[in-house]
Image (cartoon, rainbow, N blue to C red; front, top):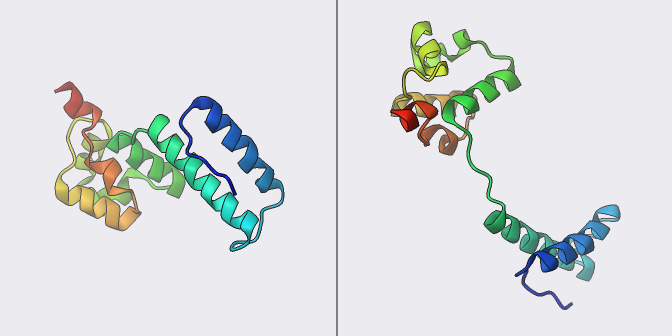
Amino acid sequence: MEIRPIHTEADYKAALREVSAYFENEPDPGTPDGDRFEVLLTLVEAYEAKNFPIDLPDPVDAIKFRMEQGGLTPKDLVPAIGRLNRVYEILAHKRPLTLNMIWRLHEKFGIPAESLIRPSKLSAVS
């Protein structure tokens, strides 16, 4: 089982070709092919994380996405954010989230805290 680190774009493409063959007929875990598949996936994921990082969304965009996903309205956010006018201020980027709001949004709606704590467009402009 000769597996090497992925250092170049060519290495990456070769690893993708090899790993994609396993998707057609995924090997059983614990078998030699299953171990090879798992190691290749780990290498590909590490290379992608290093070379193609995905930036976290703006906090308000994360909230709006969760609202869309769950069919939520601004009124549904009142327990986490406060009065309805405060919810609208947050959604319009006119007021930043507080730590308590972030915690409640994470707890009640499962919005990743990492997405909520980053500076929003509002504070980036101010």
